[in-house]
Amino acid sequence: MKPFVQRWINIVIDLKKNSHLKYCIAFTTVLIATGCNEDPPTSNKPFTPSYTQSLIDGDVIWAINSQFAAIYNQNLAGKPTGNKNLTASGPLGGTVTITGVTSYASNNGITTVNLKYVLTNSRSISTSGNVSVDLTLTGEATYTGSWSSSGYTASNIQSGYLQMSGTAKRTGYTTPPAIVEATSVSITTSSSDGHGSISGTIGNRSATWSW
Image 1 (cartoon, one colour):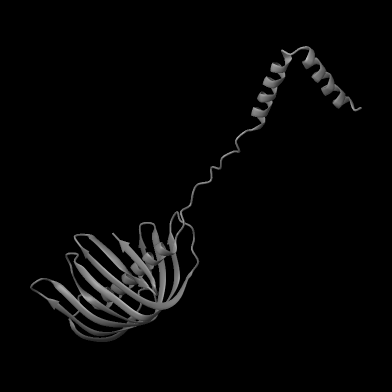
Image 2 (cartoon, helix red, strand yellow; image 1 turned 180 degrees about the horizontal axis):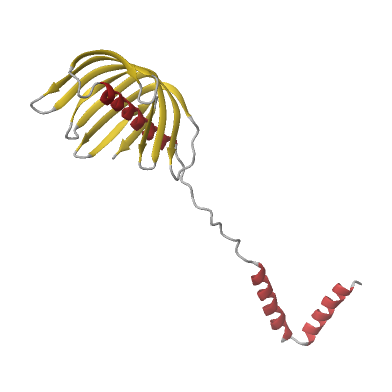
């Protein structure tokens, strides 16, 4: 018989002779078991929120609206109203052909536009807070609506087929894949008194943005 087994037999015999030792052995066993059952160490790695498709789409429709507004501001704002037919550079490269008509009502300071943009690799970078979208657009779209210098805006962008490429980032969020998509786009913007919202669709996905 092995010595280890023999020792446990002797302990069992001693327990039969000295019943009070049972409690000592049991108590010791509990302490040993408790000491071995330690909780696993917790991780101190910070949580990184996911940059979901819904957030990306909201940021993209905001960036498209920003690019269309920038094209208008760079080429038509402060210019005589009326019929338009010109080709200009995109905000950060590419080209855009602008056709249509603009008007201005002096009694209320409201500008109204009914325009068509034909974009070819028109690039812009839009930033706001922790959001940055580098976007290049190719395709045709209508740009209609009205606005005033007081902050009132009501505009709409419609495209049956718009090619989009670039990147979208939110500081502190996971990094999404690059934007590569060609689909229909519909965007409606409204604002007043410094607050506004953008809503629309990219293909069959709904998207929103507010400030």
